[in-house]
Image (cartoon, rainbow, N blue to C red; front, side, top):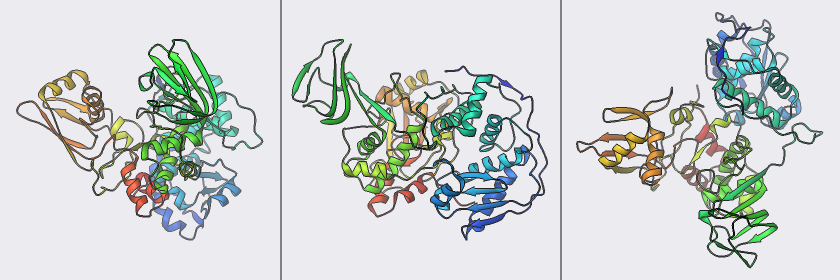
Length: 495
């Protein structure tokens, strides 16, 4: 992992220009293209005016009527929603675009057009376009240029890379712009005749020792814990009582570590997505709710290809994603038929219940998208509205545990005269110390009482970002599609 890099100006800084006289684009494809896109296009033109002059001449915006048509004409990767071909901006169908941050997408693409005559290196142009997604002018100084080898890797990935290397390049550039640790270049894979072929990804799930008995029954045989012991199984594996799963299919290992047995399961991504979907929602959840969550998990997995734990694994707990065992056939079908969720990966989150109140990643963590989406207040949702009281002693512990201060855009609150503290930090600290339902969600109001105690009133369970599972189940139960559920959770209001 590379270190953080300091800010320095580029040798070829982006020129800040006055607004241009830009000819009206010609809209083609979908008969409603101009009605749907014109407000977004005009907003993106204004929002990118400081990044460069608009090239002279006519230009076209083509809103395709189907994803198949877009793929056939552009030859783009499946995850790409827009691409310039000459003076024509090709866009995926409206039903697909509506699942994206349309403003950010168009600001990105129109910045490419403005930078065409500045002859920046490919990686540098892409970085500027990513920056333009959320900013109306270039920064005063950019991070220090990467070394020559990294620049070459970025240029190659962006110009002719595979799905994996292009995904890495975009993750790298976003991390570079946000001054976060930089992701490592993906391990080389065997070449494929189709560079956009979706790669088979294996996922490793590891159950910690505290969740497992010291004597494990596996395929009818008792295994008594011994430190350093290791047993491997392949195919269908059955477990006895007191083990949190009854059956796994794939590569299974039990290792005798210091605190007990560690159970590891390696499986394909589709199986894990299906198992995690049913682990979070329950096997009896409506099919369309499963499809919606599976779409979020598939996108989320692209940002965590090496797991969330140091050994490259995911745990089956809420720290990662809940897994309770093998999925049902319906769960696996939902995973393989999930919609393609074409969003920036920093929006791929879900929460148990929003209680009708949505927050954006920026509001919760102080980075990422500022788009909150929306959700329903589900009838009879036990987490729809909640009340809690923290004692004066608990409040003192929180003040001693959580550091005050907010990142730009992050929401916070004060504890009396102290603070402000980020709501997310207070919620997490309360959960770790006093139990995870002591402060159920971020969407809340708080008031200090004369005795020093804290009265809380809130909505939801979790961080209130992304897909609300309570809403997904409710809407799917009344017949709504996964696409409609995702559009509500991640979509934007019309401009």
